[in-house]
Length: 224
Length: 169
Image (cartoon, rainbow over all chains, first blue to last red; front, side, top):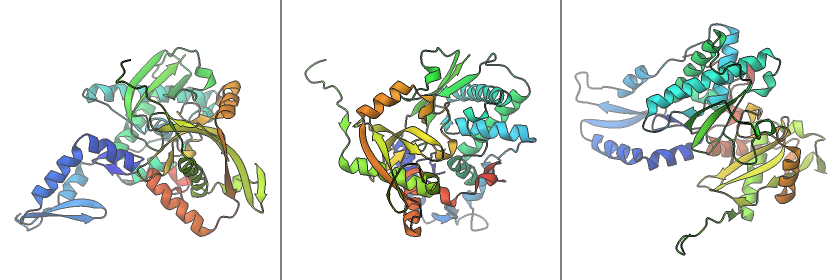
């Protein structure tokens, strides 16, 4: 999964467009120019841009290693039930990221949406309707994000695992709701949802998954 | 609305854009190695060639359109699409999601039958073709274009069984 300015985009072109519009590109270009001095230069190692500073005591300091240490680790499920539910929640919501200036609050809302998705997916599995939710193999694009150690993908995975653990521990934030869905455009709203009022709505969240949806914001709806 | 303001008129899809959507549909099938699943699903246009209709929304709204077609082995789907700066069409929704009713891009069996019929009647009918045994070069080209579209090629990803769990740290 392509990583654009540290963010996770299924569609790299879209990601570059979004990040470019935020001015990150300008800032990066400027900082790259500033760092091209006699004391430091950029090289590429394993596809990662690495700042080499030759004025340090040992002659070289690889910022790459520091960045690597900061990356969150992929948490692993401890049972097959945890694994299965985590994969489903990740497949359903892995393309969503917090949005806007109140990002912290939005992140909490996104976690609540994942808990809701986990609870309802668990009920779907228990009632023999596991085919109504995402499959329990990690989708190719999302798997690639984890494989590439994309921190946003790893955060989404770890948050999905946390949500799955809550649901398996018996959380009932959705009050026994049995349906959820992500935003759809007019014409693609499934028949079962038409004319029904959601009991809970989460978001909007940024939906950066070009392979999944171009719509920049997506809500998650829960139905009784 | 003042005279200086104009209502946004949806752009009509050009022939080139329609061809780009058809190419995206065909490329994705080859990249996911779905071609054998199309056997006897549609009219045989020639030996080992299955020809199927697809229905394209004739106008783009905010640069985005929609298409209905049979994507085997999943079934008939309705998917949004848009174009990248190189003119490649990008189909939304991941095929290995199975297009469940929770997602923005879904199997049409979850939609209202009358609505599906109406859309098929009103949208442009085009055709795509799937080769039962595409040349290796065709498949390779499809994979390269998929990387430009969505950032990865399914051909280079590990099989389903290996994606049951995340990669190890």
